[in-house]
Length: 233
Image (cartoon, rainbow, N blue to C red):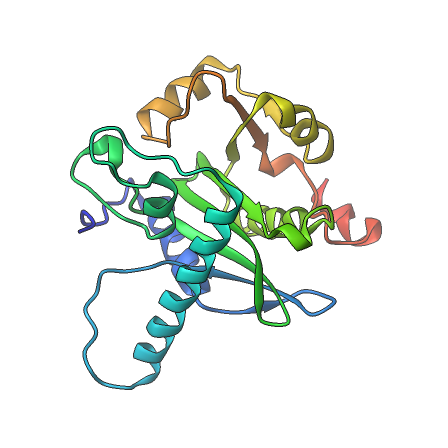
């Protein structure tokens, strides 16, 4: 069961409402690609077959497939106390009154090609200050084709439109250079940001994992042409 939603202020409420307005809406990109924001809820089914019920069934079906993609991409990580699969708990937006294992508030962003889910990311927004994206993965046959790049940029564009300032991700040391060079992330070094990551109960990783961040307000939309991007500077 997820704890009730509490807002830090009007800006947090606007972000929450903005995200929920996007839920389930399939956004067309190019070359048969679409991206959609999803979130599983614990609301019981009413037994009726109205539009909202249909959308919920469709959402939960896609969440199940998204979990399969994540399971293909990442080694199983199990909480040592509860034995719960952490990645699965995040994808399924599972809450808890125990802060350490409270994964409520997570959204799942999916990239589809001709209605096949090929790339998946998990995101959670902590007010206007920052959002975290602990996992993003692409099915094996679609890797090295820039699919994660497309999905990550859709997420960034959405967060920018909601006035979220920073995006924080974890990275294994072998991939840190790629995230910094290709995606323009930087190492988390600012003392204030380090404290906030602990304060906001972001997903914790082993000390060998590198925390990276990006200032979203400073970057253009990478899906646009240079002429269209001029207004972002």
